[in-house]
Length: 183
Image 1 (cartoon, rainbow, N blue to C red):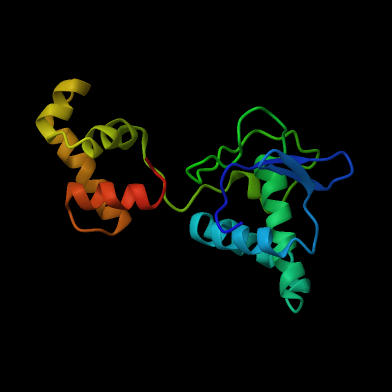
Image 2 (cartoon, rainbow, N blue to C red; image 1 turned 180 degrees about the horizontal axis):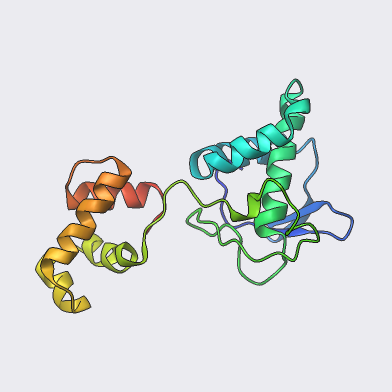
């Protein structure tokens, strides 16, 4: 399991995590090293703030790295994806679809892992513009379709480039969004 794709996580009544992949359901166990390594790499790329919070929470286990990473992964997916539903938590494109989990400690939880946002995300305006930009449409065409001012479209693209730290270039922005599963 190199990529985290097509997975449904669920929180069991006993407090353990199950995951369904390739039609089979398994209990996520401490010795599930391959899933832990894939999940940690994915978390560090997409949710670095959550990793920091959880690494601090489980700092007493840092000397046992596999166990430490297992604790981080377990806590993250229990908080973000613990409800069992008919939508994959991580889809075919590697994008997380977190759900509201009714957690008994949600309002008293100090680390608020469930509220941590991904490292990169599009604003609502960017989410409207980016699919059209990725289709190769010009600022004017996008503005016409969305009934916006062309300067507003250009400004939104410019702000996104600046926020993501890339050169002001629509093609580079599209490439960045594709690489980071934002489209």
